[in-house]
Length: 391
Image (tube, rainbow, N blue to C red; front, side):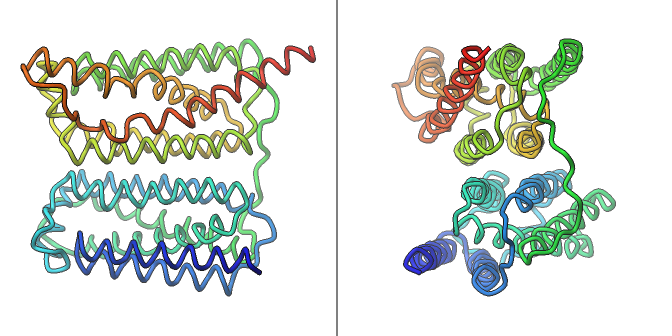
């Protein structure tokens, strides 16, 4: 009883603080929407939850995060931000600058980070996890309905079929989460892969990952230039080696791996939000000499790339090779790449631009994703050593 009361009070205080902050910093529209979603989620959690196990909720929960990113990508590509300012400007404070960076940080990065932390607590079987399952379900249903409403407005370039389907997908996955929270099963759980891959399968998957790496390298080089290219592609190749030596032979235990992966993604996606808000691409272009627009950064690292990362959480939960490889890729990327915000980028700015060592976009939150990445690395290596000791 005390534990439940503590959870209720924690959720109430957090929700009230978030709503007031949204009102003060963004405007009444964001505060009202956040308040309604949070209140409905609280009612559902306290009065309607009938689920006996949390595991069946995890898979659709992870796919809901993917759906949010798909819808957000469609909105950005359909030039949604100017429409937001034109059609809904009255819901924002005059002091709130409606730009791609602020839209991404407030309406994409922050909600998704909350969902990622919620997924961590859901897998850990905590009351907060169940509340966040309700919150995420209500949020994606509301967001999907809002997307369908946007399609009836004029004044922007719509991706009618794609955005409508993405909105419908949000609604469907939100309903599935609600049904499972109510104790209903809407689908038969597919068997997860528990065995390791054969040598032939490892080589075929490796070939596929190398092709994906080459495609990713092309787009990174075409937009951002060689500096981000070296960091990202080096992380992918390092991840491939780590995957082949460990989780290709035996998939990571999802009960241990996915919570760490969600923490890694939560810290990293908040970091990406900071970069988008503070002009990371423009500053990288200044020190590298390669033009890189903020729009290209948001598409590649804020929207399209994260669709793959977040889908990998579902794949990792199902013990699939794809999720285990991306897990390794981001572990290497966080450990090797994030310190560059302190040790490389500001130093290059000193040399190239003649400025003092100072804040570089993304610096404040850069090192936090390293913590779950290091813990995940220790976990995987420890499990491998234990298997070798038994063998």
